[in-house]
Length: 359
Image (cartoon, rainbow, N blue to C red):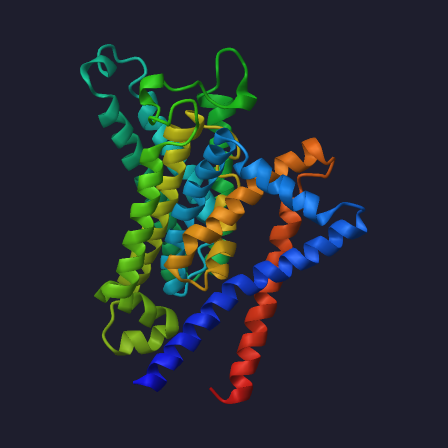
């Protein structure tokens, strides 16, 4: 029993190091880059922290980004568990936002609907519509992969372009503002269709609650259900899983559908809780960033929330670097890029040591 406990403890320590190692290594490398650029690493870090958590407004902005990142990453964990690289999450977020906006626009000119206590029902319908939009777009990628034998990366990227083009067409065409201010997006939805937020802040307790529920649901689904076991079996060895009687096509489609549902939910939340309209580039790269968070988490749902918080803080805090330290805000992208390389490096070293030890 003691040896088993020691083995479990070593495994836990290894997973923690796999998460913290790339972060610390990336910070060291980034500090070196800052020194070469003539900037003070300590002052830069303090300014990042102040720009992320210095005021209630900034903390709320971090929470807004955190919600999207957490929901997207939770969905990606499902597809990654099934061995599917769902690169098309960006398009699925956009499609969720499009459908959510369309549902909301159906009630703009209907007199009396919003006054009869229906706003919450309309918001719920918008969220449900967004989820459906994400599911449809994700299962389209799944169909190209499972039935058409198109690699999921190419299928996802192709559908990303289609979804982005559709949103641009709607913003600058069918849903164009009469005033002509199309760069800001479509016409604002009625304020009664905005997700309630904390007073004076952008963060909504409802969206925060949704993010927690999504992560908890994915965590328990992957760890404690037959479906989660089937996902792992398909992800490890598709042919062996089929031989053992697993309905592999159904499992793969379910993985795409759940991942798309999370993406569509993120898109709907961005519409009803943040922008209150469809805007160009509404996904803001959250789908791609979710891939990095999933890699850093070691595909463990428990680590999603703190890692996503780090990236959300980096995204918001980098704005202060340009304003106060005259450093380009793209420094956040440099940190993220370096972190990708560090993740690959740490994972490669770990696999090399495991192979070398014969385990």
